[in-house]
Image 1 (cartoon, rainbow, N blue to C red):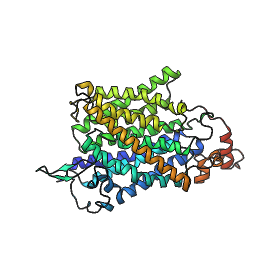
Image 2 (cartoon, one colour):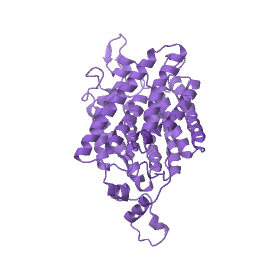
Image 3 (tube, rainbow, N blue to C red):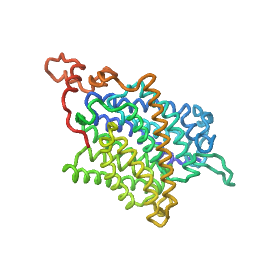
Image 4 (cartoon, helix red, strand yellow):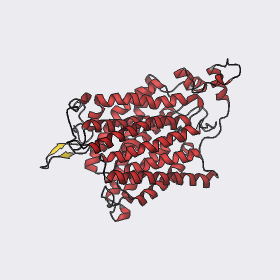
Amino acid sequence: MVNTGDTAWILTSAALVLLMTPGLALFYGGMVRAKSVLNMMMMSFGALALISVLWVIYGYSVAFGNDVGAGLLGDPGEFFGLKGLMEDTTSEAGGYPVMAFVGFQAVFAIITVALISGAIADRAKFGSWMVFSAVWATIVYFPVAHWVFDFTLTDDDGAVTHTGGWIANNLAAIDFAGGTAVHINAGAAGLALALVLGKRRGFGRDPMRPHNLPLVMIGAGLLWFGWFGFNAGSALAANNTAAVVWVNTMVATGAAALGWLLTEKLRDGHATSLGGASGVVAGLVAITPSCSAVSPIGAIILGAVAGVLCALAVGLKFRFGYDDSLDVVGVHLVGGLWGTIAVGFLATAAAPAGVDGLFYGGGVDQLWRQVVGALAVLVFSFVLTYLIGLVIQKTIGFRITEEDEITGIDTVVHAESGYDFASLGGSGGATLSGQAHAEARNTEGATRA
């Protein structure tokens, strides 16, 4: 029998997570220069369109089909085209239609792909990005989702009715809503792609200021709003676990924003709006894997540390010379690693996950599991992403030309501009190309260091 309350919560949460991708488009779009805003937003919307289709055709089956090999892959043909799932009234776990779960997991796949785009802003061909998104989702995200999110099920007699992925079941690492599958996965992929595509023209020499900070703040607000569906929705029920996760998500995010702002103030003398928005995202990333395992006080500690760590980590790209345009590595990879590994330290059996970490007398048992799970996803994602990106670059080309980069990717790739300055007055005869060339000659302020 369908539990209508749980079903309503899952579908509502799915809608909240879906909103996160347009929110991400605003967040990323405001952080780039004016000549790249449309391309940046289109990369998120392109992922939304493409991955939703692939998920229905075979993605769900690869992620949640019965395991076909050592916990690494679900059966691609079991639910191909979602066959047979419309007739199922409830999941094997009971209480909600399988299609509600299909929709909820689809939006996780979408935003994971979209997150990667921030690492290669200003310089990637849109068509090549779409090819990459399809290939990466197929051979990286869908299998990793199987590892992390697909749990083995048994019937009342203890017989196995469904075999899931190795991280969730064999390793027994805790990742409630996707610190490994989403954030470490996307962060490692972003680093690999940034290395394949190389640095933007003028990186480390020309300041590259975010062109619209109000868009960044709006995007961060929508991400925070949608993240309650991301985390609390992962309880798959309107219950105490969802409530605890909701509170932990709220308070960890606030603590992370405070941690980032304090770090900026002490280091630079100013607490910035960009730092506040970035701190929000850092806290959301860090609490994602651990939200069911820590207490609210633990969530505050975890979030505050995440804010400081990620604020410091975004400067690593200048030290090591990789051009992660919008700090996907500094926020999602570092934040995801901290949030996942911190379970081994801060988990308490009083929380819904029911596990004690090192600081609560649990020893290192959970800690080593968290470390292994995090590193496995990091290495898998980085290596395969680098190979995918390299093949695309060597065949159809991934990066736009230097001339097109100077002109502006919006004008060259999409034949559009985010802002029609000619309509504001003046001669009215200025071309978009001329506008972009003039913009490229100007110094555009300082990016966050």
